[in-house]
Image 1 (cartoon, protein in one colour):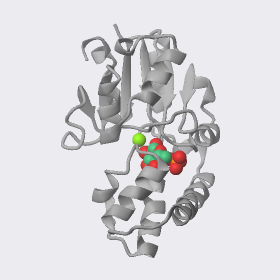
Image 2 (cartoon, helix red, strand yellow; image 1 turned 90 degrees about the vertical axis):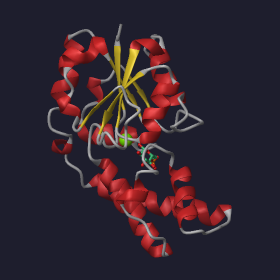
Image 3 (spheres, protein in one colour; image 1 turned 90 degrees about the horizontal axis):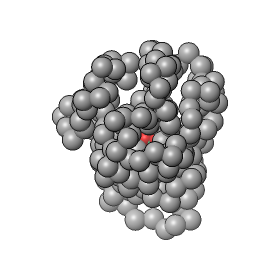
Image 4 (cartoon, helix red, strand yellow; image 1 turned 60 degrees about the vertical axis):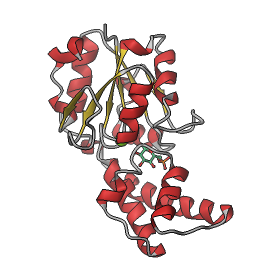
Length: 214
Ligand code: BG6
Ligand code: MG
């Protein structure tokens, strides 16, 4: 029986996935790496450094560690600039209402994001009170598709993986959820997220009556 709903942040609760893309695109342009929303799909859900590695691989660039750290920092500065201009109203429509309704049904709610900026984003959106547990990129060693972030969220809730369903917009996130032994609701396109138990185009479209039959 599903007892907890675990939410990814970027692209599931708020459109910060787009800000990540804009910041990576800016860096890619500076480096002369061809980069569009298509290539960006591979970066979704994975850590900052791993995202940079994918970008460099796309551009067939080999750089030393110091330069890579500087570039990752640069991308993050741009991302933080975009995020700091964000208003609490930018939360995806219906998400707060969905989480509140799930809570009323007795579901525990957790956040499980690969982003080190997740606490700041949650604070900006003023939604800390929606979550029973929060896991961000500073708390894990391995990022999605490794299941660590979701397993940690489940253990913080004192629940077994089989009791949890994950809401994810990234292919790497869907894989991580399934590897954790959890159910997964994909947010986005069926082509991209075909391995999920259910795919819906927007988080708010989740049919709550499907919770028991995922
Ligand atoms: C994930 C995003 O949530 O966090 C990725 O989907 C991002 O695109 C990753 O790279 C790491 O984020 P941050 O904020 O720690 O650079
Ligand atoms: Mg995401």
